[in-house]
Image (cartoon, rainbow, N blue to C red; front, side, top):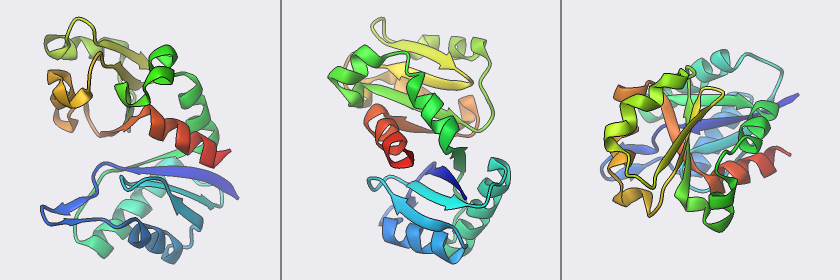
Length: 178
């Protein structure tokens, strides 16, 4: 058995309804995924299954999600070792150790090229830092991300399929995966 993390792009089904993590765990169990567990209420699922490609797991999870909840949501999957390497590659560890909510990781389905950060420059405040590491985008905010113009620019339309997690979640998932 291999361990994986699945990251939902959104847990909002309608303005009045969000995915409940117990329902997400139940869906995973019904799919035959072993030991499904979640972190926080933002669509982070850790599970075990026979070794499989992340793309096939993404397809299976997205199909099951659409069937169960009636809406398509991008779901990105990473193998445990890959997630551990991603967490270890945090280029803003000094900031994240002070305040993990100021460092965000945009996990990408397709790796971003190094020059992709250039399209975000018009939205970046001088104290905000960007770095692409192994195709994923790390952002260090000077102040609360919700107060930054950059946060709104980190969209699927602009960057491709991906999802954001703050350092606290990245680290928590790495710990869950061992």
